[in-house]
Image 1 (spheres, one colour):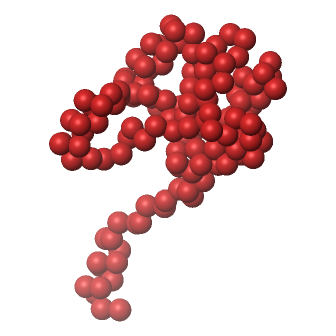
Image 2 (tube, helix red, strand yellow; image 1 turned 90 degrees about the vertical axis):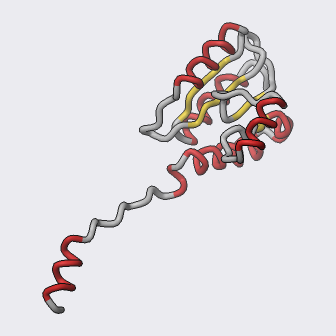
Length: 138
């Protein structure tokens, strides 16, 4: 290897290791939805996601806002009442993920109205929350 090529390869930034897909918010959420639909087929249509986070043009964003888009809403909604709550609202985060200010504000608003709001960081946390929430129902 000539001196130029060696200097270039030594100064090159190391490539950033990507997290396995299962550890992204989307990967965690997909695993949760798959598990839920297999475990609770009677409620499969009552757990859903509102795609609020997608990137859109300014025109599309304005239209979505006019149609009722609200910043900060949870990732998953389970529209099954329990003894104490109207529904379960689930925010999916990675191990290091944190809520943004809009998500915190939305959480406070829905909790004031007797909705249960949880943050989960793994499939096992989701399973625990679902089993606890649905215990009086199923």
